[in-house]
Length: 197
Image (cartoon, rainbow, N blue to C red; front, top):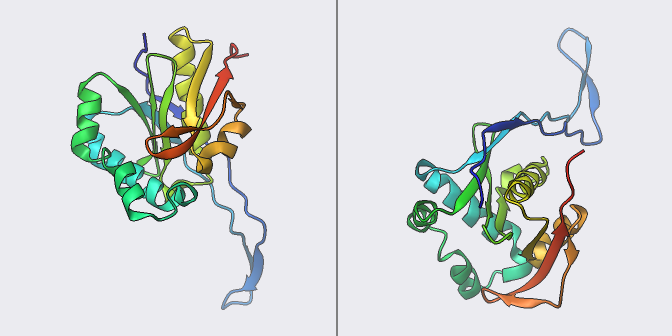
């Protein structure tokens, strides 16, 4: 049985792009400006029916903008993929007992994930403007912990081409030949969970 997540803060790592430059201000004082960006604290929590519009936004923006390797900007394929991502559909998921988790970052929902009672992860999407800040990793770890607490020691998912390397970098491995997943090529994957520590 899956248990609802407790709200817990997660600190994402500091992002330090390379570069930076020094300039002089009007008074002739040199100042160093760095493109360093500090990711603010994020919070992983269960989604509620009040989140359905933000969840829909994240899902549709992520699929449209970040999964082009999968849908190839084919309007029919894209329409089919996002057809069940409306706020009304997401409300039904929540009301049916599915446990969606979200990652709040910079004051808004920026990542969405769904763990299933059968030990699967059904979806994991990050908003395009939040990519590169570790939110996908943080949310995936929370979903994995949720499945571990539910008694699952081996978990599974089907990765799109766009997400395959991400899951591999998080310790997931291919578990069979590619399959058709909602009209798209999908790679079955699995991960053996280990106790923390």
